[in-house]
Length: 583
Image 1 (cartoon, rainbow, N blue to C red):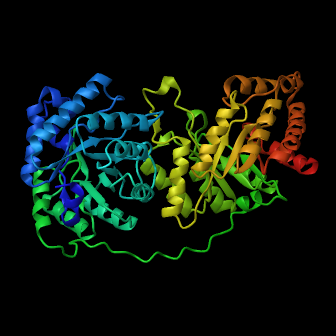
Image 2 (cartoon, helix red, strand yellow; image 1 turned 90 degrees about the vertical axis):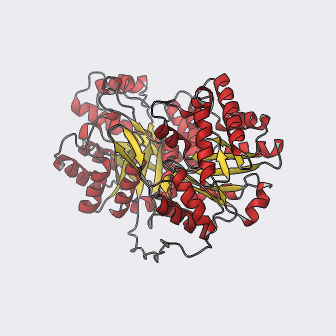
């Protein structure tokens, strides 16, 4: 029966988790189970038949991880052919779906998805499952290609979302599902993997997406014993939740990691029972009315054309003593700083946490703070936990940057964690703003006006704006080229701009910045001006030059971003006074 006709009056039940079940059945077998398509095809066929005997009506080819990023082109094509032939041989009257896992291509995932789809189309595949995706990059293009080549093909696109409703890429599952549901080339959209059945039920109900939905949850959540990962989800419980999904209108069901034939057998039996109220019904709570939002004085000033507020960067302590930092912050506040920005372990060296210091400033001084947030040191869970805490503490502005990598000599001991780049993290924060937070963050980014190819920086900045960035703090403007690049940025970008100003305090300081600090370029004229200057003369020059920079950038910026050298907050107070007098 044509699959669309079948779905009009039936639930389509898929198989379970091939990868985890193969590893359990054949612990000494292929580490990458897809290679068993060639080395042990009888083992793969036996697993297909076990799921079919359990009662499923659709099976996935054993090709989840096959693509040209993981295998050579010849091997990838060979494994696809073998995997499809094994599935067709085992399937009988069941539907066979070409199983295509996520493609994490740094350039063009659509190209790889289309290449994979074409291999299956040549074999006669009519049903496609793109599963476990953290983003929809390339999927819409692939679906369009399939429908152009085979208009009657049936395409399911499925995303992997955590119980909080976000994917590993930091994207909202609700938004991804809605985009898929609205694409005429995609026949069904849904979720699989990562979440258990109970949470998947809640996520799909909350999404409220029309059309055909699919749900293929894990058999609970993994536990680690020794060096192996296990899933201990109870088949009866799993089946009860699948029945609840059916009762909510989900017509395509199945399992992912840890779901074995016994889970599918229990689900098949549950599907034969008449629809009923869920065993574990979802309880919706009335949304709590948020407390009145205190005014974000910095953002208000930044949006006022009559003001050009000062954002002043002050490094957090390298030890556990906050006294000097807080004294400096008080001095900057008294001098007229609208917000204190705090770097997140600059040059990948540990300092007191920028977010904790931002909360301390807000609580003790009532001052707006702008913590920098790198993508380097936190995974997705830690990032969301931190953002929730910042929101609760009244922090309303964050600066998102990729972050300096761990120096190479330390990589064996201290590992970088890059779940995001800055653009993806911005989109993640924007998603939290829309779906979770009562009081949203204003998201800022960095703009390197000293980059050799500034056009690339502008392209990245535009992408950041597309992902929710509302303003940019620039690197210091200490050359004519940097000033020209700032002018170009003003023309090209929609967001607020804060022009970067860093006081040069000595010739040694200027040479060091030129040689060892990425993103800072000091003109030869400024370097020469400091020759022979003592500390007092150096600070006097710093005030003069910083004020001149502020005057030069004023036509192109909405505020000033001042960077404090060596904790010299008194110098920064002098500079702010001078800028107010001159500009």
